[in-house]
Length: 420
Ligand code: EPZ
Image (cartoon, rainbow, N blue to C red; front, top):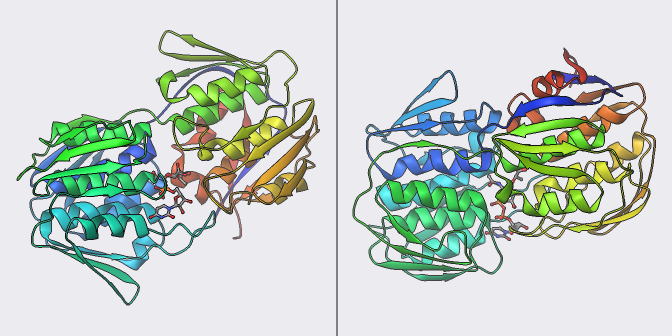
């Protein structure tokens, strides 16, 4: 099991390139199941969850070939299995996004129910409600959800809450359904818009992606395509905070500022200089950081996937910040570890109060989920002394060699092998 050891205190300076988006790559790879033949994807990030999706597609009978430089070829012409096994789904709940494509294309899907997760219960009732509205017969069987439909038909689906993968699953199912589907209260995340772009390139007829109302005119057939995946806005946000928290001067390349408006607005409110520059965003943090409140919201609001990172930044601000998590019921697992490093954080239900400025000190800490692990890396960058972060497999699930990128900017960190 790997650990990351960080000696705090370095100021980050230089340029860093953002990789392709994890949360776009996963549904896009799954969308290859909607067509027969070979799809080619570029700018695919090298991270654990993508490897799991590759394994899952292989399990279904697709031929997946990865090439250096972030290229993945997926040939679905020999797909002969519609079961997503427990062993894979339990490691990555996003595997559920094969449910829609398999049901739509093969008339049947058998997907292990994801079960609970460190950050919340995360049910998939909206995914199932939508498929049932499109005519699928849904059964729960020995921990698996089984969906069957000779051919799905169009439907009007109103989500009870905004769900990203719910919107993606039903958008993919509707692409091959008979008739028109409308998705109301749909997720507006850039990754949803990107998936719609890919599906339309495959021959789908989708309108309104990026807005709360998406309309899909089903077609009989889709074609494999070539596509280059958008940059990862959460990785970009994490790098912006890393630069700001170390009072650095960094150009974050290949990110799309329009995907980061809410994050940039809060960084500026905290006194961080964020300036668009040719090819990216320049971050400088000279002034004293100001306390800033956030409340996580669906896009275009402040992303829940940036809450933990922003919390660490607020440990350096002079005063009290209030952070509210509205999306997941249990997304403060990083707080006890940050408190062990000396952070002054009070938890009140779904709200935390961060008092600063606080000098953090190095310690041995445990990563519990993907974004929590990123926050521990950020805390270690500014802590006095050395921090050892355990279970960094959480980090590698969603970041493409983050430690290597931070080292190139001047961070003092390396990996070691160690016990669980
Ligand atoms: C996506 O998860 C992202 N994952 C998450 O990123 C992200 O945190 C989340 O959206 C919110 O932005 C991927 O895209 C692969 P939701 P998803 O369905 O789709 C409830 C990361 O760090 N809900 O939008 O699973 C749910 O419990 C990960 O990269 C239902 O109740 O999230 C949650 O409270 C973590 N029933 C809320 O809605 C449903 O059927 C939003 O969840 C579906 C969701």
